[in-house]
Length: 258
Image (cartoon, rainbow, N blue to C red; front, side, top):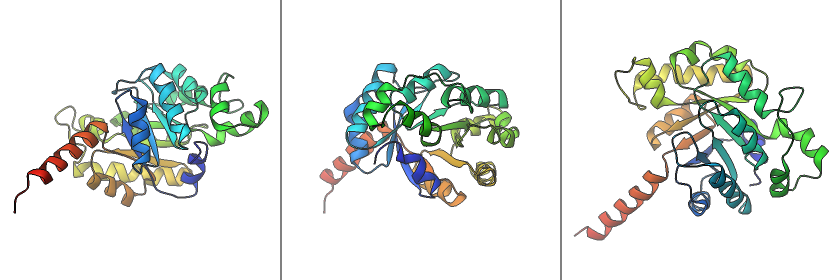
């Protein structure tokens, strides 16, 4: 799957699943894609990725035709621009709590007249075979995605206004931080059924705005709930869970008697 096709597939209504990659090893990101994920998210916010590991991870995924998504650190719109220059298919910006946050993020990820992204996508063009500068410029705003994370009370209050920002292609639900914010710091529980209403509202309002609903699920049960609510890009688990879960299942099978 060439990376630029990710946006088209989502807008066509497909439901896609992204691996969540925190460990800065391109071979691991490649293995996650080969195992069956539609794309891989390289996490710079809470994962251990830096600019060099993102560059290598995007390239490793491009070699096998898989799309790379980058979650940038909070407020690092400069790297949002660089991630797209490196060949990312989408960028997730955490803690978009107000319209001003969304506008700054959109400005960094979209070329004029939508935003103010600086020109320099030479690595992206090399990886994905763009047919010259003009061809990339003409298509980049539509084929790369800017996803604003909604994960606080403030963001939920501003949801419709954030969705209305030109250049924001969709919203990305963060249930863990949402549970902390909605409980005023009393608990962390991304599976809390009290989140169902705001999570469904996010998907419904995104659909009304003609934009994408995406989100993170810590496990398969939450992923299925997000699918039922109308989410079409879903991060499931993370590389620590994939590795430890696989090892535990293997050892349990080896040790099983009878």
